[in-house]
Length: 117
Length: 157
Image 1 (cartoon, each protein chain N blue to C red):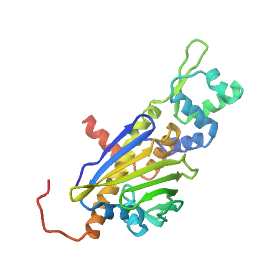
Image 2 (image 1 turned 180 degrees about the vertical axis):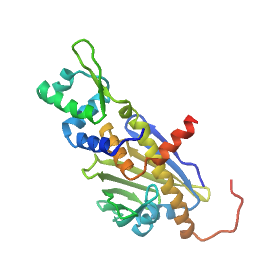
Image 3 (image 1 turned 45 degrees about the vertical axis):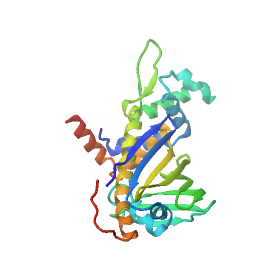
Image 4 (image 1 turned 120 degrees about the vertical axis):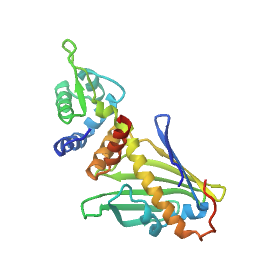
């Protein structure tokens, strides 16, 4: 699960390009070949292959051999991204709201002690 | 205090609910007044918000800047208020700058009386795959990944 700083740099570099982000978005829908990926971008297959090489190097996609085809898919880390993102959001929000409880306690006049559920 | 729920709604939205032991007016104010916002909207530990601009009127802007408490680099958010119904509803758009802006996140926050307190329901846009990956990378950069790793450890254990 831990990523090295170098991998992060590679991932940032890979994501800085709009075409590569679009390729990732397409792969989020499922596995695709270079030909299928090239079609919507009006790009040559070699150009798409170069982008795929960057994404593969950053650990964002995986490729497998199937005869002469090499279909691409999101790496497990990419597939897990939704769960990981939700966990990050949950963590940030729950810390925020716990602090907000404290802010609200100061804002609202104190009440006599009541039994809490 | 009160358990938070967070769940996806289809593949386009995330809905968060949380109860607070204060009336809607106070919870609403804490969401729009800069001096209150900067006291709590800090994410996981170790961040501060040196800049907090919030103009709670339709078309008013928001800008929140976070830096690490150790002085390290941070990130910021900009947005605009679209609709405000005092003490009950806020609709706004926001985007993170990482440093490139993420796609607009459309957020609707409702505050409903709930006994002596408030039930808050926030509905926001689910970011696309590439944006989530970018947010995760930024989160890791700022040490926000820690509790997820802990969570995994608990589940695995």
